[in-house]
Length: 199
Image 1 (tube, rainbow, N blue to C red):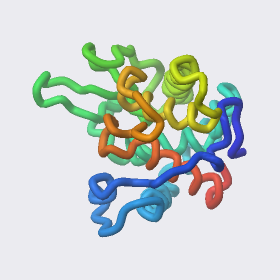
Image 2: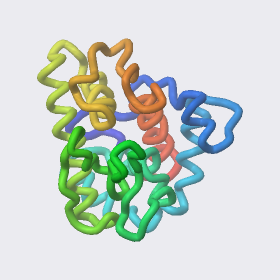
Image 3: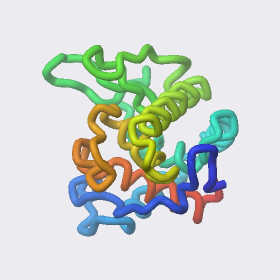
Image 4: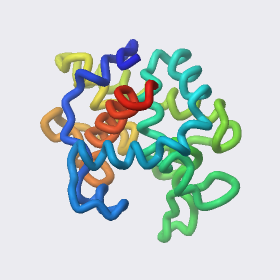
């Protein structure tokens, strides 16, 4: 299902991954093609989470392909997790981890300040991450009431990365996100999972 209670991922316009993001996989091209390549690279690892992703998507009325895409972008389906406890993004300045789990929930005291729920690769964790996503979609919906449903969905995805306070306009929805492409890359990956991997 591409459609959800928060919009249809297949109708969201996307430019895909930036050169900076594509470079992580050594790709010499960017855009939707790069996002699709990275989603496909993670597809095999994603399989073990498929049933959980589908259940959580149904529970939160979020397209499962979108949850898979965030897992792909955030942890490469668990491949970039740096410890057995599920920690990922490390802050050299603070000498502490910023994010946790498949969906890299923000635990930074100066950021999201979330307390990890469940094991890093559990359904409980996916519920927490998806709940945070839904929270941000609703914040963007309230902040930009004139945006169409799919624009609010895209803005919510950008806010999942950098907070709704960093989303100022639809034309520059990713200007403050990691790689300058977060929502565009995630949407392109989600479209690939929907079209090619039956999420």
